[in-house]
Length: 518
Ligand SMILES: [Ca+2]
Ligand SMILES: [Ca+2]
Image (cartoon, rainbow, N blue to C red; front, side):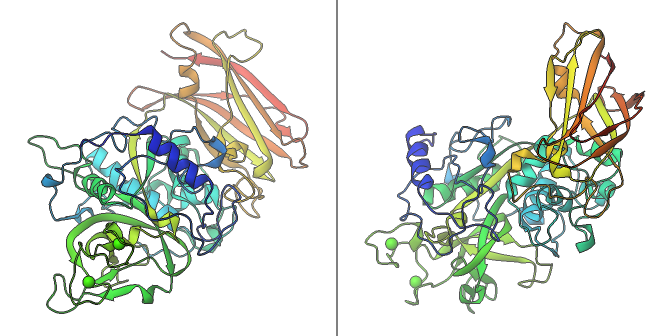
């Protein structure tokens, strides 16, 4: 049976999930849902095919509402739109051995979500797109850039994978070489990238779409295996290159669920997780492949089986499988579990006490060439309260904008909500640093709204203020418009004169002629 999206299944599932308490990662609950540890969320899923779903609140920003389609700008097929033919799948795939996969990292702080979503998955996908290898800092992407956008300048704060992917959608991700680090020490927590070249480079490397799917049935595991092998898009005569998947595991009391494959069995001596940890909070990890032969005798009956009802619920489902496992890369260093990797039985994905562990996330990346940008040097003593809008009009004599943009980072990242997973109540540059920050904002999407009728000169309208209820203040130090050709090569910079750029409760506005380039 071809796997197609069945809207009624999505609706039913969303309805069920909406009623379910949800455990949070490291206490992080972007939509303010209180973390409930060990809560029973739903019964074992019936055998459902793979389909896109939103297990709120961790799979997408709650502020975007229930109709937000996180895959809408991607060009590849959505989950459930491709046929999964398991006959083509090899018994083992390990994409971490590909040259596009970055080194295995050892995280220092709470950035696991960004190690998975950006430093690992984004780096791998971007290298595949670019035809490069992830062996140098110029082709690796950092955990810290996106983490500092959402950790509220608090080293104990966790983050979700979607924070990194939304950062990549909205402003992009710079390379490690340009940004300067994969992850900083504690003194770098909450610091934003200072320097136009970093922001300009970030604009090129983007996420087009991301998607979560429940993975707790045999059909759903097969779809995930197909994504890891060739994205369920076989290309005749071409080598298959699969994607990666983001996982959110529960990491308490891991010793209770970690087993070593015994002598005489396939891959003897390797470690395998037979369930998620029985306690603790979530931890972002990366699913890099699978091995259908890896198994463990979970119920101790002397056999490794997939066809015996070992959990005594009267039916044989994925939950009863003792053979077949994902290959998982952790960000706890190259020597953790011998080689930084571990096996995770497919059946561990079926866990009604750990809803997050039932889902996998994936991305499609894209390249973007900015043609026109804004370079700003700006200070504000409380970045959560900063409000900046950029407007344009196609006529240089216009008195008001036709289109406006409120860049996420210069408006307190409203997408990420309050009070957690936000920018933090700190100065714009970072904690204890009231010096100005130099940033770049891409104007290309805004300019494209003017359409073909506009040529010659238009008008730019800039507005700087702080939230109505805030005593915060700021100062615009410098402003320039920059143009690039269709290959991204720098053409020219047009400085905009700033006389007295202070703002706070009082709005500071600036308007200038905008050269329109076609
Ligand atoms: Ca057994
Ligand atoms: Ca069973």
